[in-house]
Length: 338
Image 1: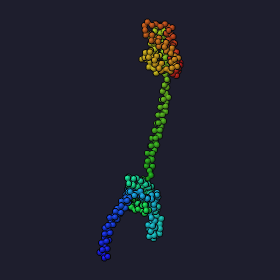
Image 2: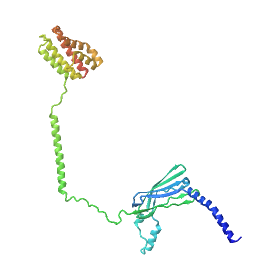
Image 3: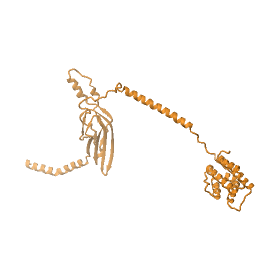
Image 4: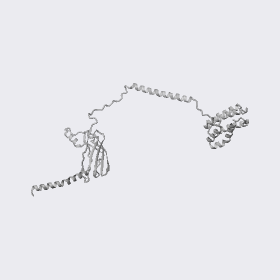
């Protein structure tokens, strides 16, 4: 078989097997998950918080093993600093900047979700850089089903110094009190004057309060009894002045009911007063005084008619019953009995 025939057979096999190889490669690429890493913000100052996010999506994303980073403090590689000391002829020196970390990982969490056949895994890392410059973020290690490490493009972050020029901040000196000497004295004197004025005002107010007459509660029974004494002194019963007696004793009793029981009896008829007493008095109190209530109120109601002329004895009994009824009602509501 000459070389020309061999070459033609090789071309035939290559053309025939190429679609199968490309299909297998395309299938492998389709099954391989998409990996994307971002950092926010991409430019920050020393110590500013950063969010480093890694997203894995695809049908085979669930098969990717992730080695979650631990919270830790990472210092710069010592080799570069050691070489610097070796180049320095004066020998190694203690450098305080070596105690400043490169970055600090403050926490990391993983979230998983699925939509149909597509699985999605996200890893969010919180970290902060403490040295200026352009830094490549720490790689989050990923492994496939065959335990082979999966690589991805690790983002970079640019860290700027808070004080690039290294200038000293202005510090205000402590307050000089010598120039404010008289001001402090005047403030103290003003506070003392205000305190003295408040003390004198309090004394004046208390003296005025003590000098004002005390409010004495009204004894409605005593007022009623004083009115009854005035009727007796005017001898309205002895002179058989029935209408004037009924008018005055009725007015006194109505005023007593208003003050002691809260019954606004001045504008009520006798029937309305009777009903109000039955509704406002305790059942036992009303029952005990029912006879006096009826006899007193009925006489006043009958006295409106010209043909009714009660005798002196009847009027005296009515007056006694009125006084007795007022005392009993006053005692039932806690009023002081004279």
